[in-house]
Amino acid sequence: MAVSSHLDVQLIAASQFRAPEGVAWEADPTATDAESLVEFAGRACYESFDRPNPHTAANDAYLHHILDVGHDALLEHATATLYIRGLSRAAGNELLRHRHFSFSQLSQRFVHSDDNEVVVPDIIADDEELSRMFLRAVDDSRFVYDELLQALEENMASEPNALLRKKKARQAARAILPNATETRFVVTGNYRAWRGFIASRASEHADVEIRTLAVECLELLRGQAPVLFSDFLISELADGTRMATSPYVR
Image (cartoon, rainbow, N blue to C red):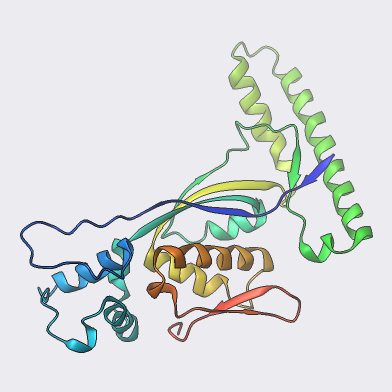
């Protein structure tokens, strides 16, 4: 029977900063590693390590200036890696369009779960009858998948390599699985790429599922670099879902 899966996003890696030896510069004690790294990269361009401009001497003021003038290439030095579970393959296909990220995705070719985990759209999950109809359709597709899998393995019984036989059978049978099937990702991106993803996908015009993902990513990344993501304002829409916007998004 189909099991409903829910979005889970966790930060599993992030940039650390260590000031180089032989440079008369110390990180702002209020800055995170990512924020210190971005500031250092910017100051290294002009060797302004002595912070000559009092208006941008503090880390937060310097980073806000970078965003104001659009020098966001400096944000490419800091990276974060998130582990994402409970995302539908439909939304996963949209995520993969952000080619500045690095991806590792759960393989349907090798991983065979006995549980039929799917992501049920909220507009369906909120209605008992629609939810029942949806899960019934998913169960039907999984039944056909299992039947196809068994038949394909029987057709390839002459193949002596059992692993190859299973792999070929699964890669053919998976074509019948619905877009709602759960997938999982490890995603690494620099902060410029993460800002671009959030700017486009946290918009009220984005699909609800990937918008939910974008807002959760924003909240996690704020913990790593509050200043670099402080311009995004999270608000609630009439349907109870959330969105995020920034004045820097043009």
